[in-house]
Image (cartoon, rainbow, N blue to C red; front, side, top):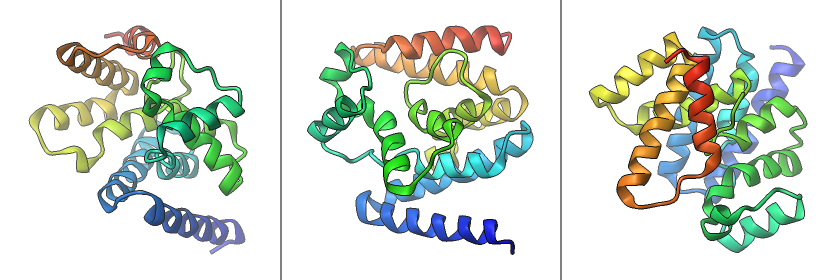
Length: 199
């Protein structure tokens, strides 16, 4: 094992220890599922595997931060807090997770930080790494074993952007059914992915 590989193992153990103290066990399982699926999709789509695993492992660092902490950290770092995020601060957990990844664990790679920050709402013209983590978050094995999910997992292996489009489409339909607001970033992500995936 090289020094770099050894350092990555040590860092991963630190992150997992931190997660075990800050999120429930079921969420840790989900996070490990996202890490694994991000790795799998990175291999298939020729993305950086270590970056994908790191972003997957760190995507939910701030998932259980209280609303006031999410708002304060986002404001301090100059992250835009629009009307929807102001009333639903949990939507900021992706952006704040990227802050924690950088400030607590020293992650400086912009691709990794973007993938973490964009995993919830997405973004138009996301880089492949961001698209991988975005899809893995919604489709990792612990999400279930339904026919619909398995079909979408197959699509994610064949056409990453079509999977991004489908994930957005389903999320938007669920939000409409529940009478909740739809963030413009998710709409923009869907429309972009529709073109990119030739849906």
